Every structure is written in C-alpha cells, then in structure tokens.
Length: 355
Picture 1 (spheres, rainbow, N blue to C red):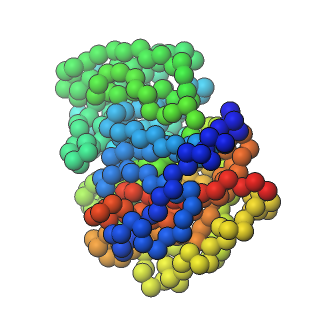
Picture 2: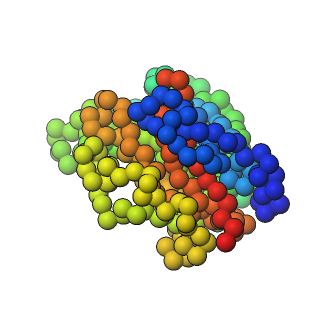
Picture 3: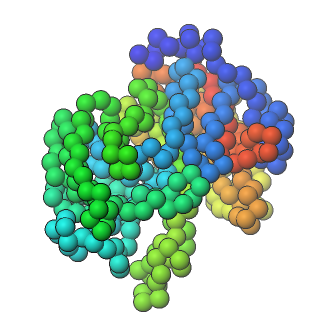
C-alpha cells in the first residue's frame, strides 16, 4: 500500500530545480522542494507515469501500442498520444473492407471519458479501420482493418489485416492483469504499459484545431482544412484507482487563452496558495475523478504559436488524493527543460499534506 511507502519517499525524493520557459538555465527562478521533471521528449514520444508516494517516474515509449481493452468493462481506448484514430466502414463483412475513401476518422476525447471514445459502442464481428498514427518522427504508420471476434473477462480475440487483405492474422490476448490490456497491431502482441502504482500520467493527447468538417459542408477536406489534430501535453489522473483531484486556482475567474497580454497570462507564482493549502481545502474545493481533472489546465501555448512560448500556470495548485487517501499538493513549474530549453519536460513540485 502507498502508506507504507511514505517514509521511503521522504528518503528518495529527488531535489531538482525546474526551469523558466524563457530561461534555459534549469536552476533559474524556481523554489526548492520535492521537484520532479518528466521527460516526455520534445515530440511527446514518451508517456511518463507518476507515483507521488515514492517520487517514481515510469517512462513508456508512446509507439508501443494502439489499442487498450478495458479488463473489467467493455471499452476500447485508442492511443491518441501517437494520433491513433478509428473509422467505421459501410461494409459489414471483414473481407469486403478494402478502402477508407470518404471515411472520417474519430479520436478519443481528450478528457479520458470511456463513454465517448472513438470506438464507444463497438460491436463483435463488426469491422473497423484503425489509423495507426505516427512514429516518433511524425511519419504515418498506415492503417489496418480490425474486428473483435470474441471478448470475455479473460481474453479478447482480434482479427486484423492491411486494407488490401494482406498480412491478415487473428490473435487472442489474455486479459489477466491491470485495468487495461494494451495491444500492438504493428507487433501483434500485448505490451506492458501502466505500472502497478501511479497517480497521474503525463502524455500527449490528440487535440482538434480549427473547424470540425461537418461545418464546412462540401468544401471540407479532412485533415487539411478541417478536423486537423495536433498533439498536446496533458496530465491524466488514475481514476481507476480512486485518485481524485481538487484544483485551487486563485485566478479561476480569469479566462484562459493564448493572448500573451491577457490578465491570466500575466499572473505568477507569487499569487499561489501552495504553501497554505491543507486537507480541509480538498474537501471545501471538492475533488473530481474526471480523467482530465488536471488535464491541460496547467499549460497554455501563447500566440504566435510558431514561437513555441508556453505559459505554465504555476499559481494553480492541484490537491491529489491517492488510492490510500494520502493527500499531496502539486504545482507545475515549467514545461521546457534541458540545456536547449526543449518543450516536453514538465517540471512539478509537490509535498505530502500532513494536516
């Protein structure tokens, strides 16, 4: 249990200092504390799982899986951290699916809600087309037609092939451990992704920019002038293990936007309540078990986006209640790090709340 790890955490917590986004010096301008940097990579090629009770970061390469099957339910997640998407062809016979012409691909919503995934309401023996997303260099990995032919609490059977029918195979994957069974269509195998214990994961999510295609009518060109998706960093909590988060934002009334001169983007860490927050504040604010209870609320890319300037809302404190009802206060300090001040290096400070 995590309670038994707290003494260990006090001994091994890493004292590290983050970096200001405009200053490549990783030791510039930040307060000392139990501070960790999760290296996702400038291309968000890694997912980093965080266990606060042991100050442990577990890094997993994004390009190891495409599908995740819920072990105690019926949901299927897509790996939107590598821009995996799904489409439903008109043909209902697996062999008849040979093209994705005219299809619009859907992504899982960035809030982590299992009821609104791209494959919500999927059915047995119904073919779907899976866009395998991109590799670490942004190269398209192609598409597969996929059909779930059997599903039980102990296993799932997956039939898949290239759209032209080549490389067809059927695999049965055991669903024996963890909350999800992660599967690679590229390597035809299950993979280990989530560690046994974690509170939140820093991961890329696919975010739609611009207009949805249905708004443009006949002039819509998916992926060109509408339904364009980009990767953005997000912190998704482990609500499967009863993790909840209460957010203390002293400037909650101010609009979050990408205008560098907006009032919220002028606020700094000096207005943070981090030092004074207690367990009682978790109760008074109210905890949330939404997957994106932290989400992308700690970070904003500013205009012009091509400049790569990020505002980290270091005045926001997240009070995290873990599965053993330990409470931690967390605030993000930076998004860029390293000698070259590269993005994809979220740095956060946290403390165990004892009263």
